[in-house]
Image (cartoon, rainbow over all chains, first blue to last red; front, side):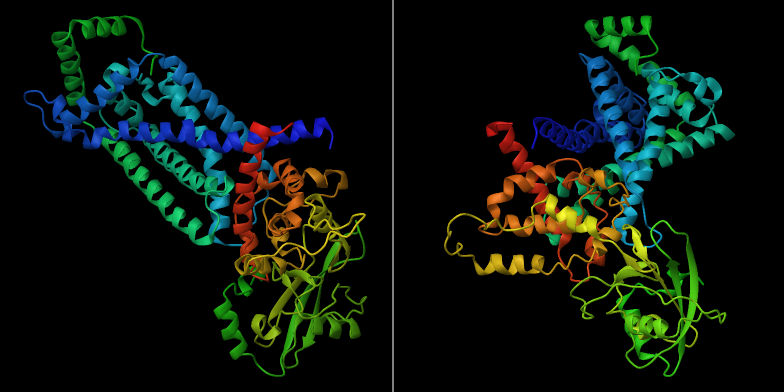
Length: 281
Length: 283
């Protein structure tokens, strides 16, 4: 075998396995963190540390979500983390589309569960790329012309501005807002399926699950992981879609007031942040 | 009614069909014809009287003796490939009602129990057609040579008796040894696509049969001498990583070979092979 053939062969192996790995770390791990953060809009009421006088369940939820978003926005080297994620998603997407094009589905003739998942893995991948692009372009890169009602998402008023972006207007659903919300529902659901099913097949790719019972057991675990993430995602969408906009604005204002009052260093940060940008996301 | 609907996927349903099979009935065979490589295809239907215990091959024999379509047109006898007639050679593999299997073991009672029921026959879609239902499965065998699916015993001196093998290991390898190279796993695989260009065979997906045979010989006490070379081939383009885990292969395998377990096992070997190569390999 020539040297050249060896290097092609190693590159092939490396790219294939990096494609598999990148879906789990960092993309899958980020997906879990992201969904846990977002779903605080539904369960953040449990968090007593953000409580203030007169706060109810939903106020604590809004405050918890705001707290999480502010925490992320104050992380050191945030841009580096973001660039790592964008590169990983780009890498996984481009190679994924290329690999998917090499196959030819045959669910018409062979209607087995595994074959349907094979087809779904590819469909959800394609759809997921569109969704992630829309999601990041509108909320992070500031392509507000793609958001109905020209709502601008701000990490300082995370709940209220996202609810407005999802609904098409601050107060109630517009027709286009409805389309965006449905798009979000199918987008996140697709990505979660893609992740859970990818976890299952990655275990075979890497040779972790070999026997059929092992593949089945791990399959149930992946289904469990997928179902849990679906619940978190749907809770988030419902939470934001039904959010009381005015209430959210009040809580967010109270949050920023508290930060300034409690800690002078934080106050400085808050002032600086308010001062300069509305694109960090 | 489409072929897919007419066909019952379920083994229980096929059993039920067998019980209600009507004696003395005639069945329509709808056959995809092709006069030679690169020639256009056409469908022709034949009405065949069904005897007790008839299978697709016996029906094709009847058509060969009576090559007249349902319209009454005289045509050429249908060409097909077959040899053992007991589902151990793989030669008569074709698409029956749109799905791949051996035609010799395909009982008409299970597929067309009533008068006038239709069975469709097509050549496999992943291999070049020689004529009618006869295909050239050369690529399947070529892929076995890619993974060196043999035991190296040739030499200049007698190497003596081979090493002992445990009973457990024997049992595991026996299941893998049942492969008859029929091509069902390739036909049903969404990742194994038809490739006319022979020069691309070595970089296209190798298929479940070759992966399973590589495992079979990797696990052989003498055969494992070539494990490194097999894993080199399977780590490259068209190797183990090109599997999409649709797992159709194991569902259509007529011998019930645990192909997906072989894929997982070779996946593990490939992982180990890469780690080993990274830390101690010369390449």
